[in-house]
Image 1 (spheres, each protein chain N blue to C red):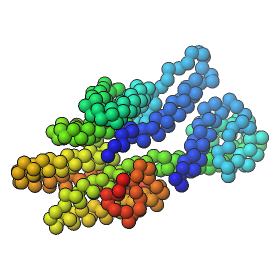
Image 2 (image 1 turned 30 degrees about the horizontal axis):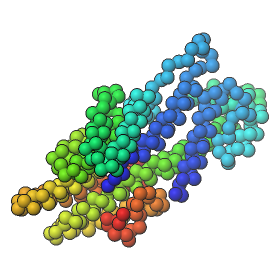
Image 3 (image 1 turned 90 degrees about the vertical axis):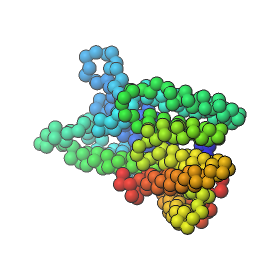
Image 4 (image 1 turned 60 degrees about the horizontal axis):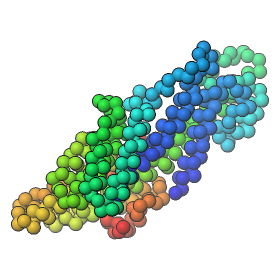
Amino acid sequence: MKDYSPPPTLRLGAALVALALAASFACAKKPDAASDSPAPPPPVHAAADAGPVFDLEVMAFLSEARSLHHQANIREDEGDLPGAVTVMTRLVTATRPHEGQKIPEIDEVLADAWARLAELDLKRHDLDEAAKAVKAGLGYAPDATYFRGHLLEVEGVIEEARAADLSDAGKKDDAQRARARAIALLQEAVKVQEQVIGRALGDGGKR
Amino acid sequence: MRLANRARIGAGLVMLALAPSCGGAAKSAGESAPQSPASYGESTKQSAQAPQGGYPPAGYSSAVPDSQPGSVAPAREVTLGKARSDLDVAQRELDVAAGDCVAACRALGSMDRATGHLCGLAQATDERTRCEDAKTKVRGARDKVRTTCGTCPGGVTVDRNAPVPSPL
């Protein structure tokens, strides 16, 4: 379950955005401009149809997210789970750029970070904190994306662990309910990821 | 990965297209980059006659008088249109190759793990059925990913006959 590099789409996206930024800078100065002073860099939009702002602030946030994931990797490799949780908490509590604006790349990073926090809590067997983290992450992933599917997967595993705990405690009915929740969540995760694959490979998602 | 080369080609085309799109108007056509290998010769031949190079802004064709002697605008426009079409195709391939296979592989990994947990929990008959349904979805997804992407990194198998969850 340990695959904690930031979403690869972000790396591609960042590269493309960097390319677009470079092109924008190159194009910003018109040949017939009266002044030689460079025009301020315009914000780059994620899509031609007036999509959300994707500028240097956003890129800085994404870079910071990547750095924090690396730091958490190091802590986790050292067996320092509380340290890894602390690092990831910094990410989910960081000031997000353009507060109030919908920026999918930021939401993806936060959904992914909450999923990782949930997994770390699960490793520490803090099921309640793990469940809270999943709920927080799902708030950033309302649509059928990998991030939502992954959060549902993690939530299913949390409920699976809860069912085992309850069973061990002799609470058979509660255990059964937790098990049923786990199965439903895992089934939903499979369904979401199937949609993601269909959409990504263009055979059902109608891109 | 089979699409990697196409991705590189697509990236190259994107770069080539971006370069002349900015400052091309100030340069001669002979300096403009070819848009695709197929159009290279045609583009080069035209460039010797064309007074201006680079991609014109939108609506360029309507601004060129048809009666201009020796005008190469129509042929040039065709070439440019084809180049743009090639660029669109390359961009789509690039998107699929570089981004979507990564996304698909990641989703397949999650799907595989979720199914493993689900089947581990299944006891009653209907739960076993749900487990088998999930396994069928995983195998179908493996086929799709293998067909388009070839392989997946990180130990995610695309072999439909491999166990679910795949052994890591």
